Image 1 (cartoon, rainbow, N blue to C red):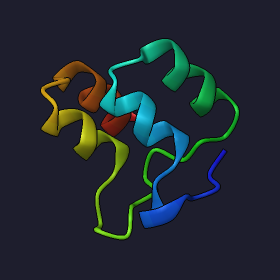
Image 2 (tube, rainbow, N blue to C red):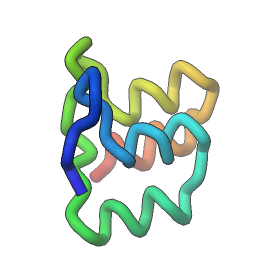
Image 3 (cartoon, rainbow, N blue to C red):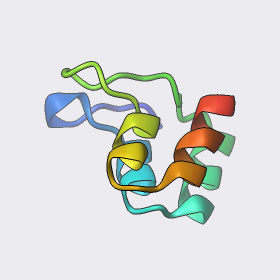
Image 4 (cartoon, helix red, strand yellow):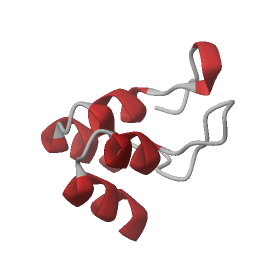
Length: 63
């Protein structure tokens, strides 16, 4: 769940950036770490917020 790709990105980052809550729920339920940071120091919530997905970002930050 937390295996980073280039730049430290994880699957949760992609789900957050795409505002795909069902996938984000599944990833978190199976151990994805919402506090994980990319090589640039950004979390999945940061990527969601940058794309205007405030509800997703707020949810991730509440975990």
